[in-house]
Image 1 (cartoon, helix red, strand yellow):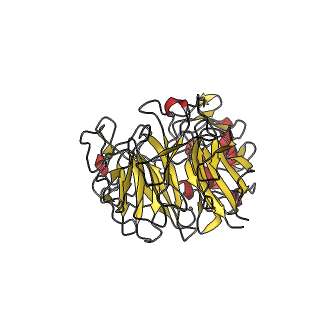
Image 2 (tube, chains in turn blue, yellow):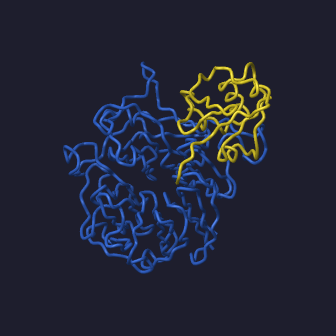
Image 3 (cartoon, helix red, strand yellow):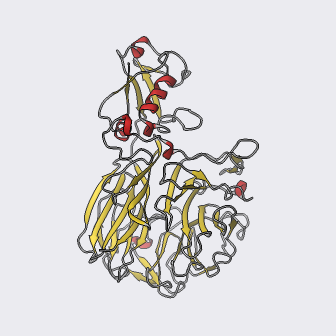
Length: 395
Length: 98
C-alpha cells in the first residue's frame, strides 16, 4: 500500500508525519533540529529518500541539511553522515555558503535593491526560504533566498551558485522588501520543459525563464496592486504564492497580497478569480492532484490582523479554476480561531482521493483524505508551522 | 592547547558534548582560535562569523577571562590563561525570548 509522508517545518524544528494510504493513523517523528527555524523541507521527486531542509537561526545563520533515508538521519552535505565521528568525518562547510554573484567588473553583487524608504540598499543574504529539488536529478536543487535571489546546487547541496540573470535582468534595483523581508519564496519547475522555471518574490512579483535560468522576464501583466504608486506596474507586486498542476504547466494560480489570480498563458497575462471569497487576501494556494481546475485557498483577514475572518478557519475550494468558491469547514474550528496559514504551508498528496494538508501558526497540521470535504488534525500542538510538503510513496 | 566553549546549538551542530580543545598556530587570538575551530569542525563555518566578511555574527559575543573581547581586533592577543588552556574562550549567544 502507498504511504504518505508530510514534511513540516516550524519555528522550532522539523517534524515528519507518516501514514499509510488510508491516512487515518499518523506516526510523528521529531523534532528534528530542535530549536532552529526550519523554513522548508522538500523531497526529491527522483529519489523519495532524498530530502533537503533549510535550517536557519538569527544567531547562527543558515544551515543546509540533507537526508538520504527519508528523514531518519541527516547530514550537512559534503562530509557524509555527521554522526559523532569527530573532525575526520565533518563536511567542509560550503553547503551553508550563499554568496551573491560578483562576476561583474566592480566585484560587487549585481545592482542594489530598493529599501523600505526608497533608497538603494546592498543585497544581504539572510536565509533560504524555499528548496526545490530537480524533477529528475536528486543532486540538483534550487534555493530561493532572502534577499531575493535564486541559487542552484548540482552536487547535492554541497555548494551553491547563483543564477545571476534574475537579479541582473534590469528591474532588480526597483525590487523592494515586503513586511516579511524580500524573499524568493516560490520556485516552480515546468515538467514539460526543463528550461522553463517560474519564481515569485515578495514584493517584486513573478518572473519566468525559458532558457534554464540565464535570462528572466517579469510576468506580472494583469496584476493590480492598489498599495503601490502605479497599481499596474511591471514589478512591485506582493505575490504570496503560485501553484501549478503538472499536467497543465502553462496554467498558473496565484494568491497575491490581495486577489486570487489565474494565468492561462504561462504568466504572460493574469486575470482575477477571487469571485465570492470572503476576503481575497491570503497566503497559500494549491491545486488538486487529479483535477487541474480544482484549487484551494485559505482566506485570511488583512491588512494587519492576519487571521481567519470571523474566527472561522475555512479552506475554500473552487472546482472551476476560480471565481466560484465553496467553504470547506467540516472538522475545522468555526469559532474563536485566530491562526494564520503561511505561504508554503499547504500541500497535496497524489493518492485517490487527493489528500490536502495545511499547517497553522497555532501549531496544528490539518489533513483531509477526501479532497477537502472533511478535515482532521494530525497534530495540534507543534510550534508555529512555516511549511508543509508531502510525499506520496508507492508501496 | 586552547579550550573553546560553544553555545548549545553549535555543540549539537558540531556533534560535540562539551568544550572543544584545539591546537592553534601562533599566538592565541580570536582569529587563530576561530580558524582552528572551523578547520576542525567545518560545519561551523558561517555560523560564528560571516563566510565572506569574516565579521562576527551580531548576536554572538566573545568572552575571555570574564572580559568581553567582541569589539577587540580579531588579531589582538588574548590573555595567557586562554593561550595555556587554563581558561576557555567563550562564544556566547545573546539571550532572547522566543
